Image 1 (cartoon, helix red, strand yellow):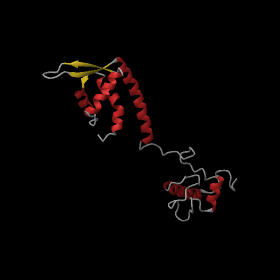
Image 2: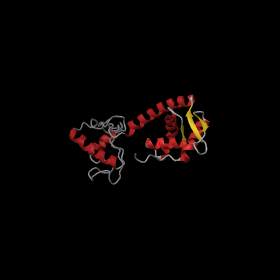
Image 3: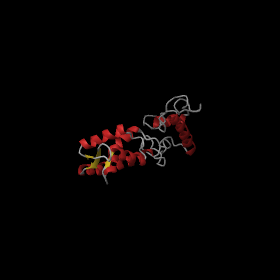
Image 4: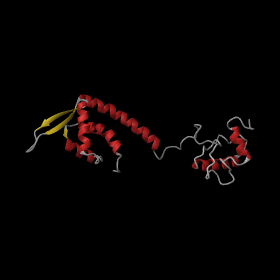
Length: 192
């Protein structure tokens, strides 16, 4: 398993411990082994035992001392009915959270919508009555200005050095049609 962010592990550890204790009671060392077998080998005793103590203080687990075989006694942890309720509630919340994160970062999702909420449409194409050639040229300049930190499709791109190819001028609205579209898109230009 890839290195897991320690903050994620700490946040999910109580849920993982409740899940591990759902079917049988266990000792701290056995829980560490169970977590490692599941891919959370980064959990150390210094992280595990405080988490178990908090779960016990919150009433989610109970702690019993068991006599050790040939050695000192050990703490045995068992989930309580309140812990089972918490496990079910937090597991449902975790699934919802994971689904939301997956939707936002999955590589196979649709491209992000344009700043006006449309999915990449060219809303400036009709403002000046221009044809497909003008629309394609504006789209190409818009793409370059997006990469340069400009505003994109609304014609108000920034004037950084990478905002165009020389013909674009400052801000990606170099030819007269594009300037009219940029001004007309806001309803204040000569196109209105």
